[in-house]
Length: 104
Image (tube, rainbow, N blue to C red; front, side, top):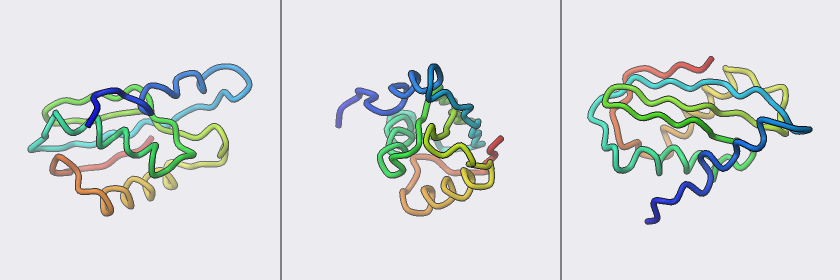
């Protein structure tokens, strides 16, 4: 498994120019974090949801946060993102224990 971030952070170019969009912030309060696997797990979100761009990934021992959005779906709401994140958490065993999920 490569340590190269082929999706996370690669989408920063979408935040400027003609495709400019405003991403939403995902914040997760967590415990029992396997820091070696978190960035890969977050990166996989952009693989499973190809219309999403993930940037600004931050990992701590009790909090994980990142920005997420879609340049092709301007009508996305925080509820839409939260639904997709809950779906992703169900389909992909996270390398942490989730205590709280917020999308704003």
